[in-house]
Image (cartoon, rainbow, N blue to C red; front, side):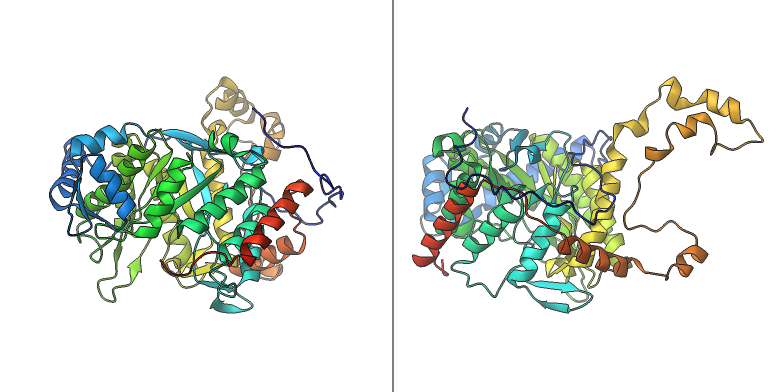
Length: 518
């Protein structure tokens, strides 16, 4: 299959990339394989009860599909579509037949095929922070998102090997008009990164523009582009029990072009879902499967992911809470349900903290362990999320990447080898009860890469740390992101493709971009 068109005038940029003067101790690019036994809090009969409750919701209560095309398709499929409302009721047998068509594993291929990802199975992938309206760093404080910060966070996304996909806008650049924002943002995403690209399902023009831009960047003609997944989207239900027009429209367009759709109900227990965790999960499953069934009817076998965002609210203030014990359990239970339906799973690295502090990291660690122990394949907001998704933080981005690297190391299989050499009986015999292992041959042969080497964690004792300036973690992270941005160079791109992207963006901007109302 033809992979790239021939370079046109100008060819590749031709400029020799200068050697970076700054680098940190990064783990190499790789996709973690999670071979751990997953935590399954619910017994088999509990899974069946949650499934049965979700099916009863679909059959007896129904889901609102606020999209006339979707309702027409579902009516043709035999679903009960209320002619006087948006309510659609689905037969459980039909839903399960549709779900069976979905693949449990698929690839997404960006313009740099070395950054291909696998979604599903035992694979675990990490996505940058996506969609906050505000941005924050130690120097400038909390402020509305802007295009400069948007570009900065994309550079961090490209720099860190532990970030596998470039998700939604890492911060919403409100200084770019919403009618053309998607054009400018996706252009920058395709130029500043060569990782898998995401597009929002917020109106047909935005979706079609995004898919066309990724097609241009891939160097493929339309028929070749559709053969494999190259771009993805995420849609959220409007809980409780609704799917709105623009997200359904975008999801259907993606599915017809065989591009992946992540369906993630936004169910907060006690607010948009029942206050009980299993009740909230059952509602979330019903909302997610309703949209997935629609997409599988439209294009059987199109790639989809079942997302979970089930957490709770602070019942004193009504504010969302993340990284809570309830969030961990809800994610693990949803992991059981995803395996029951044989679907890939998405969850998030979420926290409610307002600053890159201790709360931010313990809530994020709870969220990440929830992802790891649930069998999550796609972790959204893996780096940079604060304030329940209202802030993208430069320092938190760096701090999260340190944690993500440690998770990658945790999953590496060499930690669990049990060969005679790894069991080290000879080394123990050599050292005996009076020696130490620093100087023995077994250690000397392995010490340079035996353990994870952090770029942010400081393992010195207090005296050494204090003598070096007693620098706290968030301040060290501040210096690191500045050095990364100072030395950043975009990944190479074919000059002809870059010119074609420029021409497309300029033309669409002149045409007015996309409507700002739905």
